[in-house]
Length: 544
Ligand code: GLN
Image: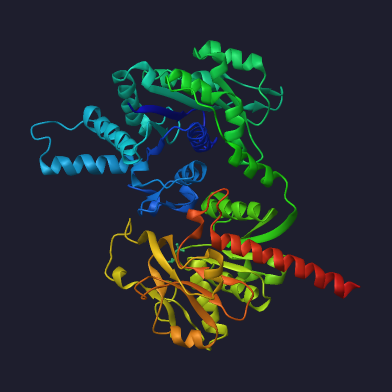
């Protein structure tokens, strides 16, 4: 019998509901339960693939090629597993499916309504996510905040599921914020009380309340919440803002949430084993060296736009016992200020993915600076395309070389549209998406990093290296070190005359996990460590 845990949010969004859901998943997995996890997103877009990063943050890509919410990244990293497109449903997808069935005549004679047609489809999707992973517990996170108009069908569907199932088969966790009033120096519970009342209006009584706050929560406040919301005192769990999201599973586990869930869901009592996770967090807390890494992109004021990249850097840093001081650099800054000024003191440069031509010349400037100064460089998707473009312009004698995405009339289209993309008109879900195999050339840095000839990484792009111009680039020292197995698409490039300058057409960040960093990120940070050591030696030598 599958059990369901529903995670809803109250008061405001962005309080870390996804981290709580992922942490609970980890805690249950650590007790040997088979867990599936999914996110229900109330927006009407079919997926976030067409949304601006300013609106939505990063688009996370699953191995099976779905463009999803960034919480799926937390799920994969915290649970140490790959989820599928079944782990992500939006209002847009739900309606798309119901309308498709209506057109096919499945409901002939009926009037299609939110209840039961939309709620049935939501319930079908929740069950499907569990079946696809053969789970005994399905964690369901509802995006947004209780009270949002667009979230109502999801809460209604959950309410139906709770009504239909025995009490020990479902559990509701409500995550809220306790705001801090500076003038009186106190945390307030009233918004939580209101939020629970709103949740109850859907027939959903929470079993566990997780309060988020930036300050410690007194027992008396937990007692108040317990009384007003009819939740056991031990199930009112205060989660203070942690130094790192990776501490949250350990912290929540120590509050006894695992036992509470096992008890309420009548699960076999199992002992938790979070030792591996704990050792990762300990290493994270005690770095032996410090590196300065520049992240160059055009949405850097919004770190969520590059969330998985940031996490992959953290994983690689921990692997090398190195703490990372991340410098978020706006690519347009590099169009008006010199690289020396902006990134003159970094030990490594990571160039982010991206679309369109804004800030592109700044990115090229970052590539040139890394190449000429032998600074370790990792190019991620567009960052790889810019590596190739800069090399073409400034080393291979191709002035004006460019990607045709930015300059369709460039004399040297070193990056051009994938043949399968010619004639594609729809923007949503039509890129080269998801996991593809990549064959590595022996003797290259890429091969050295992965230590095996065939790997699988996730893509999200329309353009690729133009093979017609490749021989000219290769003749000057650009190495194509990763290829699609049919030998048609260049997937990784690197420079012969540079200690570690590598670009990947895929997004290596999506397969990075705590205790299992992506090999390219690991190689990049390893090279940055060497650079930092050498650099300090040089500085010490020259001042002596
Ligand atoms: N805009 C480029 C392309 O479509 C790169 C995409 C990316 O960086 N994800 O190929």
